[in-house]
Length: 329
Image (cartoon, rainbow, N blue to C red; front, side, top):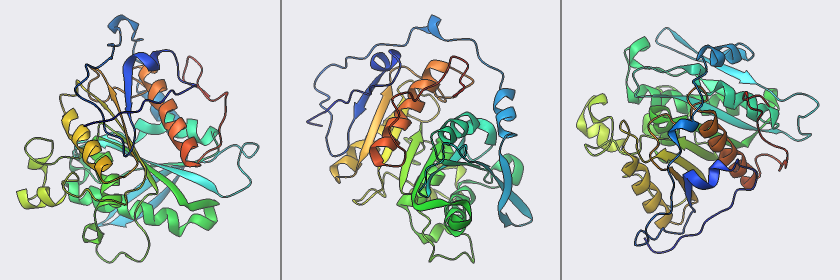
């Protein structure tokens, strides 16, 4: 990698500058220079908040079924902006897919993010998708569900008052793979009988410690029915020009999904002139961004998302955007 440009994100907390480095699309990072990163002080982490806080937030959403398949109803939880804060034009959409290894996961995981971005004028949605523990399924079914979710949004765009051309797909780990595959892979991953004429790709992506490499060097090879199917679903192999804008956030200390997969993806995607911004968090482990693990990390990643969506024109700038100490808007 040869060149780098750094961005200053104005409304992040002071912790931001000490824990992350930004790689910007179409500009490659100079690895010949030593990194100037500082580790986040362990003693600064607050005590974990109860996970039930997320579940309580989930109860504030409206629940609908977006897909029925093989006798399973898959719900989506929907938040809208306060009418006083809702934009006059059709709203942008943030669609969240919880972290998993396609085995289990909590749909309430991104409820705090949904509440925040609803306060910023977006319609926000937390989608359930099939996982092994509840449905005896694997990555292929999760990928199909993410594609169905994108189509459901566009089919209901008029009723929900949203802009079908401003949908950002957001996911963690296996959920990140599922939604990213909707943009990067083709209709061979559609649910049988689904209308492939409806676009299943999000218009932007935000990915947390994503599964992008499903080879032996990455994560998930053994979760696919065959090695050949894992190879076909390897998103590093799918890199080409024309991807939607993408923000990737990954901790270098991740022992579940190797950081190297995200770095390699960002490097190769940038070479194809895609807008692929990567933020690496020195020493952070898997799931570092979660609200119930660290308020500081949660806030830093949330504000990075906010800046990204402002830059894309999905939400309006707000110099007062941010959180209180308890994570409320």
